Structure formats: C-alpha cells, structure tokens
Length: 392
Image (cartoon, rainbow, N blue to C red; front, top):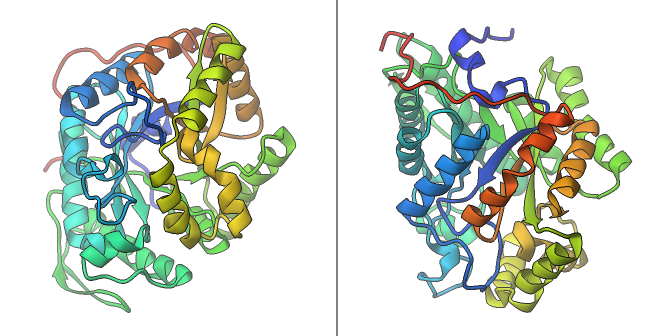
C-alpha cells in the first residue's frame, strides 16, 4: 500500500511543479567532462559554494554530489578523476550555503552500512530543512570496492543487495519501534535510528538503473529515475521515457519522474559552441582517463552492450559523462529543453567544463524557459531558519 507523503516532502523542490526541472552535477568532484583544458572545473570548497549559490539563485531544483573513492587510472591516486569530496558531508555543508534547491548525496551500497546511511541522510534532511534526497547505486568501479574488501557482485545480484539495503534504510526512517531484520545480506538486531528525517516517509530516492534489472529497481523504488538517452530522435526519446513511466504505473502502481544528464556548451552562436565542444572534448580530451574508463567501468556496465558501443560512447563521455548535448545559443538550448519536455522528460542535471562561466551564461536561458511554459517565475526563499515542523 502506498505511504502518504506529508506536507514537508511535498515542498521539496525536486518534487515541485516546474515541467522542466534543473540541477547541476558533480561539483564535489571534477564534474563530468574528461578534458585537460586549463579552465576545467576543479573541486574546492570555495568553488563548490560559489556554483551551488549561483544555481540556487537561478531557481535550480537540485545539486547532485557523486560518490567516488578512487580515480580511473591504476596506480595514480592523485589523478583528478579520483579527487572527490565526500558526498554526505559535502551536501550537509552545501545545504547551509543554499536556501532553495535539494542536495542529493550518492551512496554505493557496498561501501556504507544501511544504518549509517539512514542516520547520515536523516541528519542532512534536518540540516537542510527537508531539502535532501538520496541517490542509490548498487555497484560501480571494481577497484573502488576492492578497497573496502568487497567484490563487485554479478550484475543482477547488485540490485538484490541494493534492494535489501534500501529497505532497511526506509524502515529506519519510518518506524518508531525497534525491529529485527535477517535477510540474505544483512542482519539487524533491534534496529532503530533517531531522529527521523523531516520528510516522510523519507527523502526522495534517486536511481540510474539502465539495464532491464536496473530499470525494474528504479521503477519500484525510486522517485526520480535517471537514464542516458539512447537516441537524439524525439520519438525514440519519448519511447524510452515512456518505458519507465508505464512500467512504474503498470507493475508497481507508482508515478516516477524521469531525468537525464546533459553537458551544456552555450555561446553567442552555434558555430562557436560546436567549436568549443571540439576543442575541449577532442583536441584536449583526457585520453588516459578515457582509456581507463573504457577498460574498467565502461566494460562492466550493461547499459553499453558491446565493445563497439563503448568505443562509440568515448567522445560523448569525454564531453560530459555520456550525457545528452545542449549545444548552441540560449535559444537553441531552450528549444532543445522544450523538445525533451515534450518527449516526457521531467528534469536535467547539467554539467559544464567551467561551471561558474556556464551558469553565468545559462541565466539567459531561464527567462526563455518561462516563456515556453517550462518553468514558473522563481521567488527566492525569505531569510530565516529552516522549517522544523517535525518534532525531533
């Protein structure tokens, strides 16, 4: 039986009314572009706060911090791909530096016990005033998990583990009484976690399952399903998005949002934008990092079904984590977002080579999205303390 959503959770901007929601991706690390250009974003606390506050002032709904414990290059721990601030502590800090948008922490289930994840998530939800969401991942990069003494399980088994892990967390968020749990992967005696999150039945769940098993997990458990668009054709995009929304309704009686990732290159003309895309993602690609990704993570995922698909994906990954392209003028970008919304997409996580420059330029796009009916006018939250409706 579906659990009622309270007023606190309904105010989370991630669940708001804008037809095209916006977020920024990966500023606790180097972002998504695999490039060696000198202007590329580098993670620091100052840069994290600056970009989060810029997006917050524009009315963006979310900022997502990814989890990474080791870079792609074997034996090179100081490579930029591995320099990443912890997503949970980062989100707690960013929540205090912003007033509107949702902070999303990513957790790889094999690296964090569910009791710890439940407590950390509830704490950030309280710190943020009910602006937290949790991005859950069943497994990622084999060398990272090996640092924890955990093996990278067979693909579908990762989702079995993730499901039990998440079910424990959600019980800890909801249930007042202690409970016992003995499953395939976890044993919990007299489980309890206090205080509870402000949002009930808990913060929204995000998942990017792209395989058949991953899609089923996302449709059953996630509020927001992230996917990598397989085509640039609007009809194909609409069909891919509809698969998720229809499966969630048909098989699980749920409504889900569908988001994607996109790298954004905005310039006064489309020709200038395309020239800069080539400059950073081809001429100055981070070749060693891309080679290591292709041989490691790229070969482990079921989203890319063949070595040929991995190779074809390389330049797209160099441009921005394999996301979709938003290239051209402000009007070009607004028109593409309108097209994606018409195909059923609910939101986009954006990434730029230089986030501060990109967000400054993107301010020109925001009124165009309002004109197209994709977003309403944004009114910043008034000064004051975060809401504390729920007794802790």
